[in-house]
Image (cartoon, rainbow, N blue to C red; front, side, top):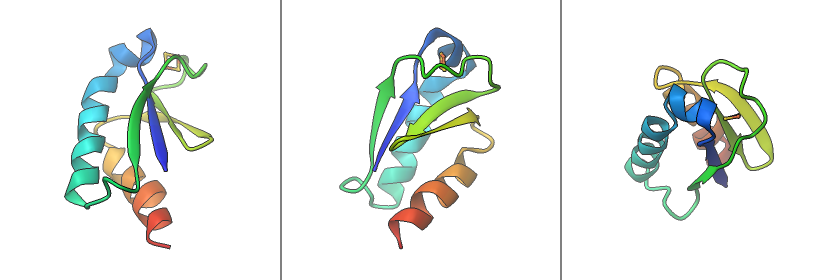
Length: 83
Ligand code: FES
């Protein structure tokens, strides 16, 4: 699985870098280094959405913030990988 975090200027201002750091922490805490990669992406074309945009494999998810990141990680990463 690959998670691309948008670092376009709008998302950057909304906090892409803390999101990337938190994702990397969550991945290593769960021992998923071989299963999930985190990368940075240019604008995903969703700048007007609230929060940061991320792309999980082929799906764009918007509105990511430090507050809801753990929920996203749980539902969209852990549950999918453990299947
Ligand atoms: S800057 Fe992130 S979607 Fe455009």
